[in-house]
Amino acid sequence: MEDKIVCYVRFPVVILMIWFSFLNGAVSEVYNVGDENGWNSEVDYASWSEKYNFTVGDILEFKYNKGQHNAFEVTESTFRTCETSGGVLAKYESGEDKVKLNESKKYWFVCNVTGHCLGGMRFGIHVKPGNTTTDSEPAPSANSACIPAFDSWSSGLPLFAFGILLCLSS
Ligand SMILES: [Cu+2]
Image 1: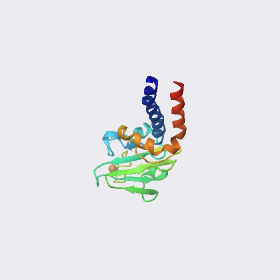
Image 2 (image 1 turned 180 degrees about the horizontal axis):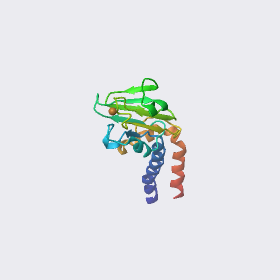
Image 3 (image 1 turned 120 degrees about the horizontal axis):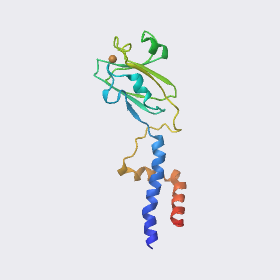
Image 4 (image 1 turned 45 degrees about the vertical axis):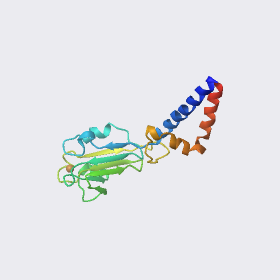
């Protein structure tokens, strides 16, 4: 009898642990460009960009005072020359720009305020394919963890069986 009770307690925990390991692989990361310094003239972005491994589905967030900077996604040659008369792929100017990295490729970013790109406000990153799912579903908080697990019973069926086996064998 006591064994049974232990089993009932342990079973959901096992399921949740397995579930979380799945979710963690699929969740996208948000990177604040320049970390706590944000997007401005005093940061070495070449070093910053080498600190992380970016994968498809991740998000870059450029934080700066609107009007003082901007963030242009450019081609590699434009990145090298800082000459933005051509090679501009996207422009972000809100001061709180979220750029989703949808493709596995090299991304190049510069600030297009005069002198800033040449002054160091530029970097390139290589975005890797990452996991098969690129869902941007937010990670469930610990409190709501049960809900997605129960919503997904159909795909969780093998886990369910596994849990029962675990219970039976203990
Ligand atoms: Cu700037």
